[in-house]
Image 1 (cartoon, helix red, strand yellow):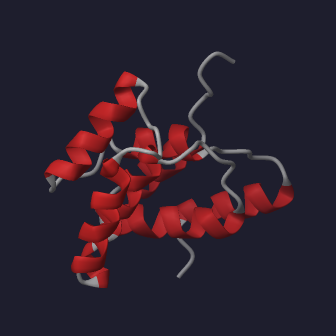
Image 2 (cartoon, one colour):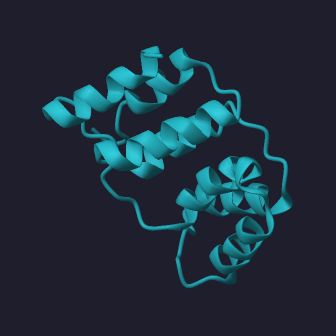
Image 3 (cartoon, helix red, strand yellow):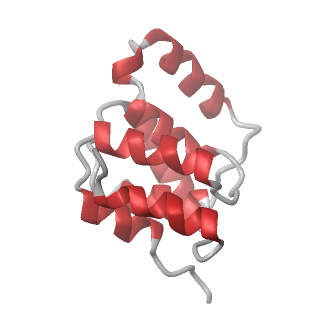
Length: 122
């Protein structure tokens, strides 16, 4: 099944789209249910500009991810991206982020919009 958001992979692969984790994942957080306090904490820290990987938050989130069944990890996996350094999203990482967003019930249009969100500060 070829879904609309799959075109993102083609755009990244062709070099016409250059998304980054912080911008895309923050945009996706507008559409996901923050089911765990750690997710809300990660979002709040990100919005404060405090996404230092040296905090115990990332470690606590990995512990929680390992405790969850694979099919229940997607929201936490998206949120943990906000605690890590910002990085370019290649086609491989994009496939994971798109899959996790879909598992969280994010609509195809919302996923596409998140990947095409304009960068802050130009």
